[in-house]
Length: 214
Image (cartoon, rainbow, N blue to C red):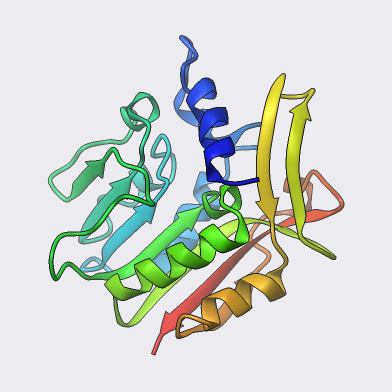
């Protein structure tokens, strides 16, 4: 499984004529209230935030009036049209593998909510190594996604629920921590972010992991 497989899934999914903003959530409940409140714990009205894989803006649309600046990287224009454009919000329709911030551009916070599970371990390591360079000292990275409970869970098969091939990798908390620490970050908080009923499967669980740059 690699990111190209996941991209094909999302490209097909976002081509639906009846596409709605919440379609980034694929079978889950709307978690945007929990997500936005958690991000605001690590933000101020001056914070400059880079969000990777923004989707339809269900989370960032609740942040734009409460932070300094938001750069939203979402490669699919079809879903990014739901992101509310305000003077402090910019949207970049580009693959996060290809995106490069402007010269000398730095951020106080980098967020990836439900994004990095669609990259395998080696791809995610490359992304961490790349984006940590754009984080200011004492800045934070927040990763929120499903994690494997006892072991890494890799999905690359046909989903009857979604009626199409589905690809994702749910790494363990321990592995993701090691990956973040390997690029010079210090994991400072791991939070069981949702009520129990939001976790649909026994072998995966949603957590938010916060890492700080020294």
